[in-house]
Image (tube, rainbow, N blue to C red; front, side, top):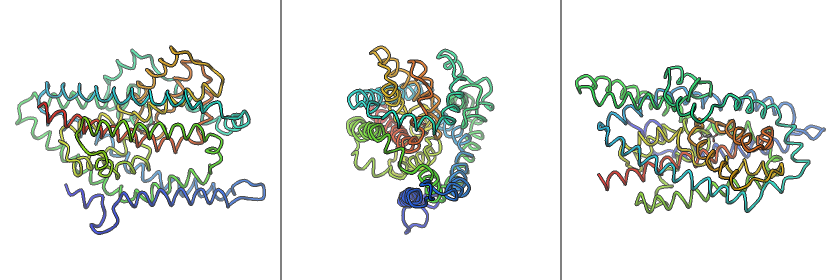
Length: 444
Ligand code: ASP
C-alpha cells in the first residue's frame, strides 16, 4: 500500500499534519474574531454569522467526518479479523489480549486518579458564580435534555456485559456510530470480528486463505478511501472548529476557566508524564521520538474529536513510523479505539466532581470510589465518536445524586475538551500497542 501517496500529499509539499495544524489555527482564530467583531447593535453576534456557521462551515466539516465514518465499520471488522487471523494461534491471542487488558486498566486507573486528585485539590466547581451557573443552564438546557434522555436508555452492568455478545452483529454495526444499536454497538461488532478471526485460524488454510485475501482487499480499498478523505482534513477541521468558535466565542471559556484549565492540566499530565514513563520504561523507546512520530495521529484526533475516525491514520502511522508488529497494532488499536479511552475516563471523573462541587453535593470516599470505577468502565463503554461520553456523564451524575441537568453547564466548552480527551485516548491506544509490542518481542 502506498501510504505516502494516500495521505501525505505531494512528496515535497507541506506534510499533512502541518496542514491540519494550520487548518485548526485558521478556523479557530477566524471563528473567534468573527464572534468578537461581527456584532449587531444589541451586542450579540450578527444572525448572518450563525447562518454561515450552520449552513456553510458545519456542513463542510460534516462532509469530512462522514467520508471517514462511512468506512469505519468495515475497517474495524477487517482490521480486527485480519489481526486475529494473522496471529493464528489462540493461545498467543489470549496472551496478547491479557497484556492489552493489563495496560488498559493501568492507564485508565492512573488517568482517573490524576483527574480526581486535581478536582479535589483545585476545586474548580467552587469558583463558578451563581449567575454563570444560571446563564449556562438556561443556554444549554435543550442539549442537556437530549443527553439525559439518551442516558435513560442505559442498562444494568450485567446486561452491559451480556450484550457484548451481539444478537445480530449487523444490527449492532448499523447503530455503532450514533448510539442507536440495541446492544453494545461497536463492542459487539468487535466481539463478532474476534470470533470470526479465531474461527478462520481453525479451518483448513485452503478455505481460510480466500476469505483472508478478500478481507485484505477490502481493508486496502478502505484505506484508499480514507487517504482521499484525509486530503480534505485541513479544510474539514478548519470548518468544524470555525462553526463552533464563531457561534460560541470565548464567553463560556471565561465563565468555566478553572474547570477547563484543570481538565487540560489533567490530560496533559497523563499524556506527557504517564505515557512518557510507559513509553520509556515498558516500550523502551524515546518519548520525544514517539510523540514526534505520531504527531499526525494526534492532530487528526484533535481535529475530528473521534477515536474511531482516527483509527485509519493511527493504523498507518504506527506501521510506517513506529514499525510495530502489524498483528499487534491491528489488534490493540482497533479494540482500543472503542475500549481504551483514558482521556475520557479522566474527563468523566473530573466533570462529575466539578458538577458535584457546583451543586454543593459533598461526596464521601465511597461515592468517589464509585466515580472511579464508573469512570474506568465509561472509558470502555464510550463510543469513539464526538461527544460519545456525555450520556455516560449523565449516568454517573444520577448514580451519585448530582442533578443530571448540570451537564448543561459544560456543553459550551465540551468541544475543546472533547478534542483534547480524544487526543489522549488515541495516544493511549498507541502507547498500549507500543508496550505490548515490546512485551511480545522480548518474551516471545
Ligand atoms: N470523542 C471521544 C473519542 O472519540 C469520546 C468522548 O469522550 O466523548 O474518543
